[in-house]
Length: 177
Image (cartoon, rainbow, N blue to C red; front, side, top):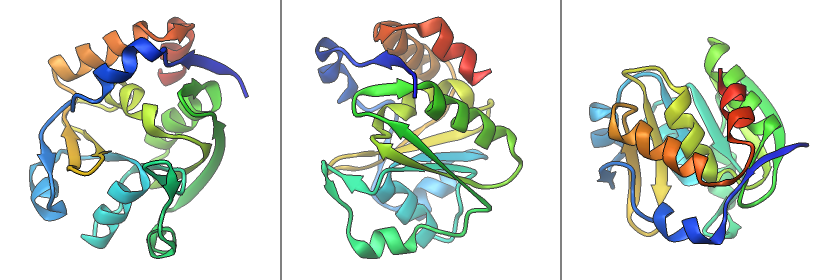
C-alpha cells in the first residue's frame, strides 16, 4: 500500500463545504443525476440501492460518522458485478484506492470497492475521474446526499483541494488516467 496524498489539518474545514446540492430523497437525486454514478460512502450507496439503482462504482468502508454502520445497511449493499478490496488509511488517498477507482470506471461492470480504512476523500478524485455527464454522490453528515456533476467549478475545486494535500499530486492524478 502506497499513500500518495494525505489530508493536512488546514484543509479539513474546507472539505465541510458541499461540492453540490444536498438531497434527502434518493429518487429526486436520481432524477437529477447523470450517468454513470459513483457513490462514495455506505449510507449513500445503501439509499441508491434501496431506490433500485446500482451505482457504476461504489466505495464503502462499513462506517459512518466514525462508527460502524447498521448491519441492515451492510447486508443491503450488494448486487455489484465486481468487488475489489483495498487498504486506504483515514485522511489519505492510496495508489491502490485510486487504481481501483480507475479500473472500476473502465470495467463496464458495476464495481464495489470495499475499503479497509476510510473512503471519504475518494470523492475528490472521483469528480476528476468521471466522464462529462456523470455524477458523484457522497454523504454530508446529518444533512443528506450531495450530488456533484463534474462540470467547471466542481472539477476545479476538487483539483485545487487535491493539489493542496501533502504528497505527490502528479502521481495521484496519473493513477486516474
